[in-house]
Amino acid sequence: PYTTLFRSDLHQFGNGILLGRMQCRLAQTLDAHYQAFPDNVMLGIMVHGKTRTLSQSNRQQLGQEGDIFLRHADPGAMRSHIPDGLQASISIDIPRSMLDTLNEQGVDTQFLGKRDSHVILRPNGHMADVVRDLGQRILTLHTEHALLNRLALESLSLDLLVKLLSCGASALPAGSAMASRRWSGALDDAIDILHTEWDQPLTIACLARRAGINECYLKTLFRQRTGADGDQHDDEHPG
Image 1 (tube, one colour):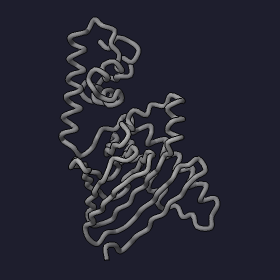
Image 2 (cartoon, rainbow, N blue to C red):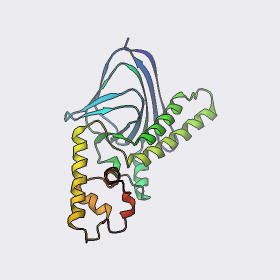
Image 3 (cartoon, rainbow, N blue to C red):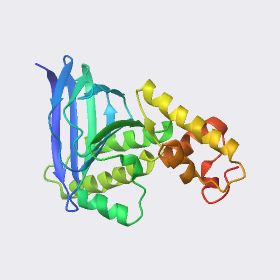
Image 4 (cartoon, rainbow, N blue to C red):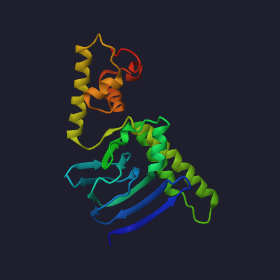
C-alpha cells in the first residue's frame, strides 16, 4: 500500500471559503498529477513533510514545512513529487467574489500574483512557526457530531486565512536559486535608482514598479540587506 495512514476532508463555510485537510504517512514516494484547477485562489500551508512541484513549463519549486502554497486560478497541468513519510497540509480556497471584495476594500493582494500562476512562498521564521502551529490545531480538531468543534474549525480557518494574507505579502519565493537571483537583481536595480536619483521624490511603490518587483518583496529585501525599515520611506524621499 502507498499509505499506512490517510485522512482527508473538505469543509465549506457560509462565506464560500473551502477548507481542505490532508494527513497521511506514505510508505513510498508518490508522484501526483493535476490537470485542471478552478477559477479561485488557493492558499495552503505545509504542516509536515516536503514536496517538489513541476509545472508544464518545467519550472521546479521545492516546498517544506511552514511554506505557503499559492495558486491563482489555473496554472495548467502540474506534477508533485512527494517523498515517503508523514505529510500533512491545510488548504483554503478563496472564491473569486471574495477576492474582488478584498481588492475593492483596499487590501493589498499583489502578492497573490497574476491569474493562472503558482508559487511556493517562504515566510520569515516566526510567522512560519505561527501558521504551521495554527495548521496543526486545524488538523487535529475533530468535528464529527460536535457543533462547537465545527464552529471552532471555521474560526481557526478564518484566523489562518488572515495570517496567510498578512504574511504572504512579506514572504519570498522558496526553493529556487533562479528566483533568489531575480529578486536580488531587482533590489540592486532599486538601490541604483536611489543612488542616481537621490534628489528625486521617489517612493517605495515607485521603486518597486521601476525595478519590476512586488512592493512588499522590495521592502523585505531592503530591510534584510540594509537593516532599515522600508515602511518609513513610503510617503517621503527614500534617501
